[in-house]
Image 1: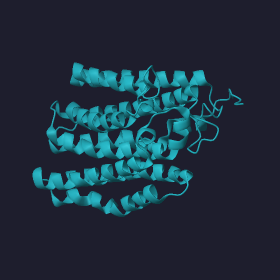
Image 2 (image 1 turned 180 degrees about the vertical axis):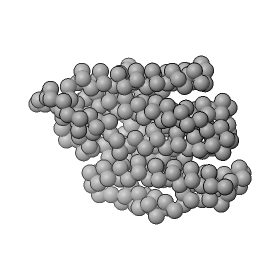
Image 3 (image 1 turned 30 degrees about the vertical axis):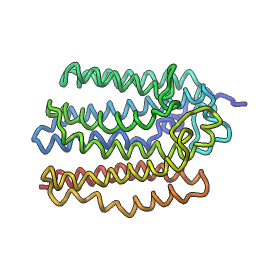
Length: 299
């Protein structure tokens, strides 16, 4: 039996926001802004607001995930992953639900400035991000429960976030921003892949049809490997096809860490060890993104 607490704890809310995975929000905005800098079009205020909106949307999605997984019974007592605040009785369910919607509302309000800059296309993109953030685990057809979570993460924490940040700074869509967006798309999806690999047995019992449940653990391991390879394939493309300098290969300094992560994915014996792999995958994403950005902006 779970006993709910009514005592406010900032620590519990910080854990519910899952700060160590927020690199999925930061990285695409940083890359999109750096591309606009190359075009002498960087608007610092616009980029900061985009950074804020992306962060709020991810936090709101995490809050909604915490609440809806609890309501659906997915966060079981035998959970291997990190503690979830609602299921652990540390935050009231309605409080968590309200926090999710309030956070999304704050993202919408902040995003109105971006709509003023970028027009109705930005409004449509922003509303879709908010809706799908809730629908990831909520609504009549939750994406994360029907094998669509990976696609959502790749699209919104990769393509949408990067390309829209670039558009807001330059007021132009760019194929270059598309190619760069594949990096955060791939690496943010890998954060989810580790999560699903760790939870595959419990998700199967709970009726949560992630790709791991549908296709099996080996498919997730290959997905992680292929997405990592995709990220490392982008610097050569920029060097050969987009006239980037040799500094664009700076992300290759992270190869040793990537090999360590691959080893943990393929050879782990206990699912609990993947908690550390998940955190390191999120940190790797940010490291790769920063190195790629530095490689872009060095003359």
